[in-house]
Each structure stands twice: as C-alpha cells, then as structure tokens.
Image (cartoon, rainbow, N blue to C red; front, side):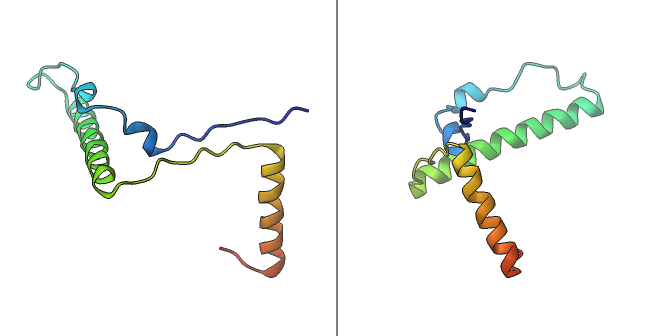
Length: 92
C-alpha cells in the first residue's frame, strides 16, 4: 500500500496575504440583522487577528514553518513513542 502524504498548512502560509486582499464584503450596516451583525463582527476580528499576527511575525522574524510529510513510517514512529510513554506512565 503506498504511503499517504499529507501536507500541514500553518500560519506562515498566510503571511503572503496582503491586507488589500482582506477587504470587507460590501453590505449595508443599517439593514443588518443581529445575527448578521455578530457574524460581521467575528469576521472583522478574524481579519484584525490575521493582520496583527502578520505584523508580529514580521517584527520578530519568525522562520517559515516546516512542512511535515505524514507517511506510514512517520505514523508508526509516533505510535511507538506514544506506547513507550504509556508504558512508563507518562501522560503528557
């Protein structure tokens, strides 16, 4: 059976998004229902969070994330580590 390869996407992959691409969708503020206002606020907070994280990572100079390729051998290695910790009574 061929090994499955899964690529992990991390926050560093979002650093290439410019604030221009994160513009608010057009809508009338006065005509929003309470549910839509809440969704809009959540959306705005998410965009602010992404922009703040981008600025912080640029200031700190965060290294690009490493991609993890999940193969059968990798999964076996992780399972062996879990079994080893469990046999020693380590929970974390």
